Image 1: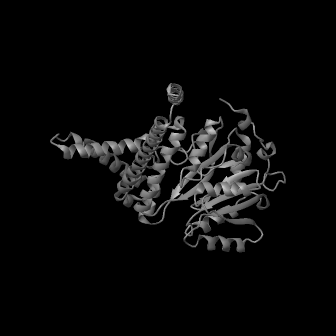
Image 2 (image 1 turned 180 degrees about the horizontal axis):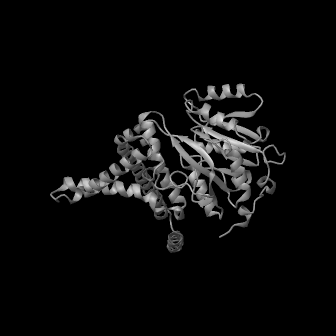
Image 3 (image 1 turned 135 degrees about the horizontal axis):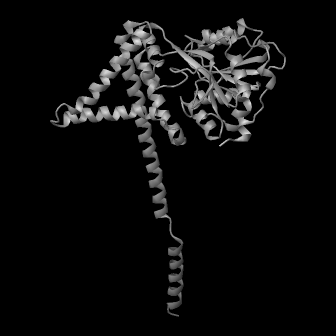
Length: 390
């Protein structure tokens, strides 16, 4: 149902036809949550500083979550090189992206907030298109298409997998970019009016990932819309090893269950596929070792292996990197199984916590003396006192 207090926010109508440099353009605050981004932060900041949106209408806030590499030093060098620009470095003691975003939103002066991660590089017209899209559509959050890029043999394979249906489950902003602006479930990064963030915020601060997905679910639950605009373009730098990829996707799955638990109506079939795969593979292996059951228990692993081999061959040839065909099956398996195990672990934790809370409530109710019992005790005491000999 349409929610008028959210959708009918200020539209900045002059922005639709305005050209860069026009004085009535909204002030934009770019927020950048970073942690250990020394390898990418220079490219990311350079892309933000090189926008075609007027420099005097942009402020840049960077919140560092106690990086353990040279990220802070790289940011300080950029601030010195661009002394005339409004760039501020904030320190995020809570160390999560959600806490970093909340910190920067509290400090922001812009009418529009645009998120740019330190692990990404945005197109020259990124900010201008974010502002235009927010001003010309009934959307509370807008985002764009994200292309993946990787360094090294494994990194390039991970990037190719992330940009494919097998790697992202059909996320529109990655594998199936629309021809025109389209309303979707979620987008990566995001751009919002500051008033939207103040009304529907804050971001979840306890989670290391998926705080943006949860906030998009909150927007849709409140009657707002999330817009994917293909004119908004960015590049995301993928992980470089299977170990870091496994850790990343396990956390995605673990926290995805928390999003589903908070917003059950946001559940989609593609989100259930990885945990269903893990259960099916586990059941097949267990049945194969449990006793003689013929070749039937190994049918599921065989079908899955054939599917990822065919997917790897197709994507390897299409991406112009046929040599990556050999590593892509391992990349797909790492993504699917890590994500699926994460969802199952999150589900089990949630069930255990809910069961423990229910048991605690029951035990407290049983141990609490009833009113009728206390009344009977008092009455019995009075009778005993009356019947006592003089």
